[in-house]
Image 1 (cartoon, helix red, strand yellow):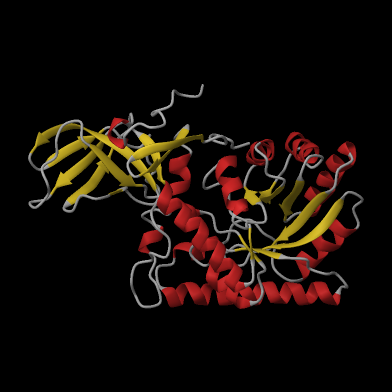
Image 2 (tube, rainbow, N blue to C red):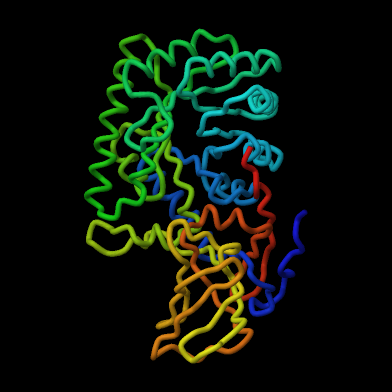
Length: 374
């Protein structure tokens, strides 16, 4: 059941009920425009990853400033995006099982749909589903370029899968999925760059073998917020999938730039708004936001705006703050903004985005694909 909205348009930020997921609209729009200019200058297309925001509203805003479409990880996410007006969606993941494949094939009657494969048997199953619905599906071969997750070995095994795709009646070989997920949070600038340089060797090897087999590679897609510039500058990737850039989080902020500073190209625009619910001692305060309000798989949230106040622990419904010697005095009922440790799973904990500008609620958007995991 969708929960009640935590705010109303026109309400001051201090009246928002908590815990609430809020977007600083000025910073959010800054990030969208900055990425649009960046990818244009680098000469690559941008297909933002909707697993970050899970919102057709945000997807359409990204497309309005130049994105070619969206990618996502689940068929259910793709269904919600298409229903929300997005007409070009890549499921940048493997989809296995007749029920899911038939949903995907049915969706391909209403939008351009792509999917990734790393298995010969799966290719036949996708074609059977598309044949049943009379649809055409773009299929990309995913190669493992160092992430150690899904993906076939680069080179000849990928060519074999591409050949199989081309032999199918309702499938189109649409290129390579090449995403180095492990590289996104390598802290050192040079080390991240080297990881992508190594990955590009795997991709080039595969492209060359495809050409030798007479198969054109229409696109190479991949790259994330932590590495997209390296992929774009390589001349190998022509589409990048950076998604977290629109929100940012604590973990991405720990990456280092070339000059050794913390990564701040994009602004923090996503926050969990929490309320001080207890001040048991002068050294400790407690918020109404714990595990169920902000994901901590990549670390604890960070307190915004309050020097010498640290979020030190979380339980299900509580977040504990340590109040340093120089911390400003907190008051019961005070609202505090938290930067999530990891934006993607934090979004999935909430039903609504509350868009705020100049401390006034300007918009309320549903997290439409919350829980869309199938």
